[in-house]
Structure formats: C-alpha cells, structure tokens
Amino acid sequence: MANNITTEASFENQETWAGGRSPFNVSYGKLMMWIFLLSDAFTFSSLLVQYGTQRFSNVVTPITTKWPDPASIFNHFPGMHGFHLPLLFVSVMTFILILSSVTMVLAVEAGHRNSKKEVAKFMIYTILGGLAFLGCQAWEWYTFIHEGARLDGNTFGITKQGYEHLHSVSFGSHFEWEVGDRTFGPVPFAALFFIVTGFHGFHVFSGVVINVVVYIMTVRGVFERRGHYEMIEKAGLYWHFVDLVWVFVFTFFYLI
Amino acid sequence: MEFYNKPGDYDAINYIPHTESHGTKELWKTFWLLLGITLFDFMIYFVMPTSGYRNFIFIFFGLVKAYFIVGAFMHLKHEKVSLALIILVPTIFICGLIIGLLYEGSALEVMKSI
Image (cartoon, rainbow over all chains, first blue to last red; front, side, top):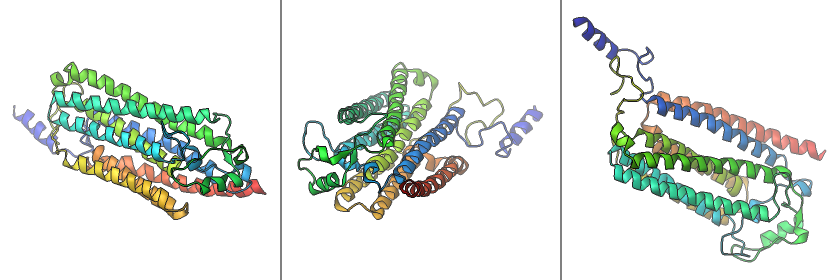
C-alpha cells in the first residue's frame, strides 16, 4: 500500500494549523480547561476591577464614607481573643493553600510515573488542605458577620478618632472597636468582601469536590486501566487557578 | 508531537498522552519561593508604613507569585509558546482595564465631594 504510506508521511509533515492534530500539542480536555480558566480569570478580574474602582472612589473625604483599613477589621486569630493581630490569620490561610497546591502538583508528578498509590496519597493531602482552607474561611466570615458586616450594610467606617486609636496600638496588643471609632462606611466594602471571597470560596469548594471525585476514580483504578493520569493534571490546573486567585484576593483585600 | 501524528490516532477516550516526570526538585523550589515571598510580604506589612511604594511592592510580588504558580505548577512554561500566548495576552487587557478604572474611580471621588 504505497499510497497509504505516502499519506502518512505527508501527514507527519503537515503544518501546525492544517488540521487533524492538536496545534497546541495538548489534549482536547486540557485545552478546554485552559480556556475555561481564562474565562474564569475574566470573571474574577471584573470583580476585582469593581473592588478597585469602589475603593478608589471612597478614599479621603468625607470621613464617614472613608474606605476602612483592613488591618482594623481582619485582626482576629482563633483562640486569641482581644488581641490586635492583623494579617496573621490570612497568612496561615495562604500557607495552607500554597501547601495544598504543592501536594496537588506532587500528585500530578506521581501520575506521570503511573504510581497509583502516591497519587492517592497526595490527593488526600490536597483534599485535606482544601477543607482546612474552607474551615478557616468559614471562621473568617463568622467573625466578620458577628461584628456587624452585612451584604447590604457596613459598620466599618472608621472615624478620625478611631484611626488614631487603631494606630496607637501596636502589633499584639489589645484592640477593640469603641463606640466613637465607628461610623457607617461605604456599603461596597462588606458587599464586595462577601462576593469576592465567597466566589473564591465556592471555587475552593468545587475544587475539593472535583478532587474527591478524582481521588475515588484513582482508588478504583479507573486511570490505571486507562493507562494515564491526565485527569489529575486537569483537576490540578483548576486547583492551581484557585490558588492563583487567592494570591490576588490576599493582595488586594488584606495587604493593601 | 508524539500524539496525533497519524491519521486515525485522534481518539479522545483511548489516546495515551505523552507524559514524563520532570522530578520534584523544581516544584519544591517553587514552593519555597512562594513561601518566602509571602513571608516577605508579611514582614513588609509591619515594617513599612502605608504608602504607594508599599502597595507597588505588594502588587509586584503578587505578580511574581502568579508567574511561579502559572509557570511551574500549571506547567505553562513547558507548553507550546502559542498556547501560553493565547492565555496570557488577553490578561494584558485586563491590566489596562484595571489601571483605567482606578483613574476613573479617583475622578469619581473628586466628583462626589463637589
């Protein structure tokens, strides 16, 4: 079949975009995961753009609509009531998410070696990390709501007096809101916090669900029969994206 | 290049992707880098007073962390350049939108106080 051989040879020399092969050298599923993540990046970008615009339009005057200082609000740590500990708890959350990202990528690496046992082990670690993060976020939300934040209201406008009070206390010493410190601040502060971290938390939740499904498939030997562990890579892409979004949420909501 | 190079090879369910392990060295290096940057951010937060420079440092290191997550963890560094470009180029426009709307937000602030 000389004819057949020539067609195969000419096919191998075909140009990238001539059809019949993946121009990006990735499988359909992985490419679609990338495209989905790009559209998800647009979703989060639009939320963060809105946050930035609202924040920049509520900076200085009048004092009652001033954007609250995140350090004065997210300053709690479980089991350490009454201390002014800004950024500490979110840093722990960030550490948990980075760690679960590493275990995920180790699962992907174990999948490349077709090691079912190691994939299952690292998937369990990743799921535990995700659940720990969700628990932390639930606690964060509980504290924030407990202090009076609502989707349609915000009790965290800080007066000039409160601002001075806040900055007079140093790291680790007692800080509590006093009546004179508080005014009603801009509503988008609490609303956007709930929407953006809620959206991110929902992504973490769905990531955990995906990871659990993939873990069960691994343990039942679905990928072993299939001959490759690419599904772990796809789940991993999603999980790392969730970590990536957290980097920006952490930067814009807590650091700045 | 190893897959889909023969007619009839493309089969979404039964295809075997070309996989090879690059080892865990790079991954752990990335982990320590991410952890180090986060700790550095944490330190800067308490050492430096609030200012535009401090915000610039935070955003810069946020982008550095994003580079390492996308490049090493999501493996984009080792994919084809064309794939990396279709994913990364649209995000440049997002950056443009952010900068533009931050300026507009500042303008709104001035308008509100009039």
